[in-house]
Image 1 (spheres, rainbow, N blue to C red):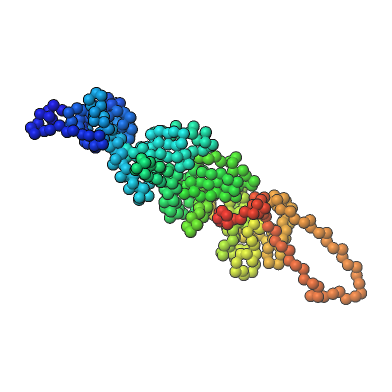
Image 2 (cartoon, rainbow, N blue to C red):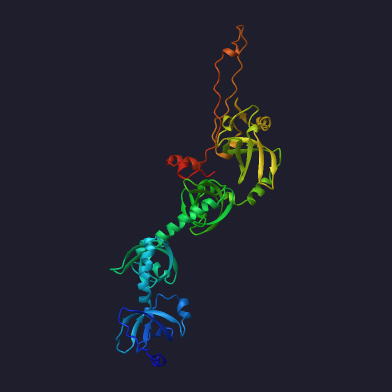
Length: 441
């Protein structure tokens, strides 16, 4: 300081309260910063006036560094200037915060403390407030929420400015709004990036009676109850927990509605190999039709194993669509005609299974649909079917000519037997439809 004042023509500065000046660090004790601002006396920055500095910035301070400071008092009792790094940053920070508010910008900031109403955050030297309602991960009632606030101190979170009033020295931030906007951007990106049929890792964010929601990195997808396990009557809450990381299979991506369908059970391909090891080409296996497409019908044999019954393998006649023979949830005897272990694919046939299936107790209508299955198969799938009627007694011989067969009234073809799971019945009773969750197949 003496050397500076000794320079020819150099006059000491006379900073006044409210000025923002640049100074040079002459001493740093870890709690008090001594700064030369070119005045007759040095200035002091107490620890409470440098909270806007990060731990890294504070540890990096050293003698000779240049800093901007705000003069809070030019005539302290000790004769030194009272300075503030926070206030200096704050004046510049107000302009920066106003810009972020005007441009609806999302930014990161460090939590410096908390009170009963929410979190305290210093942004560019300006003290801002985050109400409890604007914090994403706060849970429980008000007392429980307040108890969680202290855990946030020192954490860096993502925020948006939702209110700013320079005259009242008031800045309100929202973590919730920032995260929602960020997730919307990530969801658009993911919808373009994800591919149906791929397996992704995600974090469970919500567990409901109808399934679980999984965060795939900015966008949530729904794994419907029917896609959680190959077992029936499962309880999602007993299977999963919030925050758990699981692998999921992408079943459907709807870019218009921005919905993502997921499957937990299809994300474990090793189960396929274990199940298929029990089968051979030529086996006839009771299967449930899961989906109809123009080129055939998909049917599930057991666990994660599904195969395709090509449209040409449904009946011994020409058909234009599989629905002419089967519908979804029909139970059919499927003959395995091809096993592709490397591609996890099965080729099935209903047409080729018919003769053998009839010997096993299956009954078909004139269109090739199933009207009755063996009792053990019905019991396995939980299907009730009427007992087989006793054969009618043979009429006694008569001299009267018998009635021509063409004069007899035609018998109505029995309706095909279909399997409806207990889960589907419960949803129907509750008035919930598949449209509420999207097509998860």
